[in-house]
Length: 147
Length: 247
Image 1 (cartoon, one colour):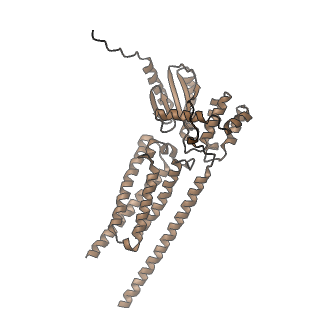
Image 2 (cartoon, each protein chain N blue to C red):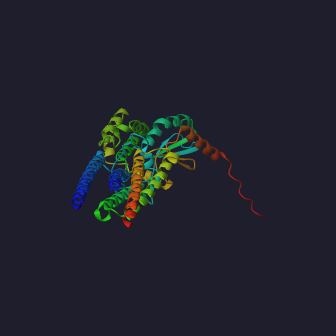
Image 3 (tube, rainbow over the protein chains, first blue to last red):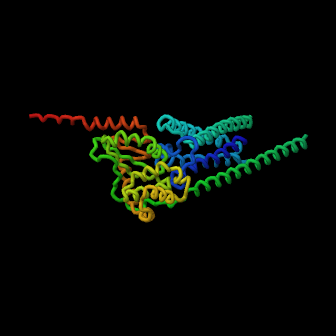
């Protein structure tokens, strides 16, 4: 339960970071506050779009889904659900891989680092760690229940 | 035993309920803090936004520097509010001007490529275009980039007051300049310049077209020079002989 609570909190924080970058990308926020790195170089590059949508918007959608899954998993009905844990782990694992690809682009292609993107990547990694802990716990509990 | 089990389970339930309450309180706190933060960020820069769709782009013009007949033609597509463009303009461009443009090796042309996420950039492009009416595009261009941090969206909602200050420092007719900017006289040309960049495939700023090559990013002087030399060599190379016709 604690792991799912941590996932929900992290996903909410990540959603705000992704929302900030999305609002910048669509022109609602004028300039990124970026005390470290070169956020604008990264967020105006061609890698800031994926399937014609801002990467940040994909991130926002992912965080919202993770938040919804974690909150669902906290309800009494789904608290022992291994499926919920699997879904969270799969989504987090895919997102960590995508974040790693984007970080590679930042470091080795653009030679610019976006501190907000790095923050999002760190949050997603923590979510994956919590998701793996949760998956192990629910699997163990399911095995105990089966006898 | 049964009573003991029951009270134990009650204790566990109470503990879980308290933990659950704590979690939801924390969740609401994160939600409120995040909402306040995003709200503050979204209202920080509210300079007059210009809707590109409201204006029909005019013909692209650009702003010329150096001999238009120089052997290598260079075009820059840039956004006045983009930090990388500011970096290029203040760090690299002085060398480009002194060693390549003023020596007649390069013909340089600047095209606006305002990015939607920079609210003050259109006003900056208008200020530069209006300074051009009075023959001072390049001094205004330099002033805009040099002072970018003070008039950027992050810093102010009223960039025009800074542009009026630069206009005064450059000795422009301030009344004519202000009228030109506020009535957005050159907006169609600015959008035309941006359209020109879109045709070339510009996706980020600054982007340079050096000879026939499109190069994105605030490149160093050495890289710029290498590209110019390569374009000059390509231009000087004799054309490939045409294939002989069989008799």
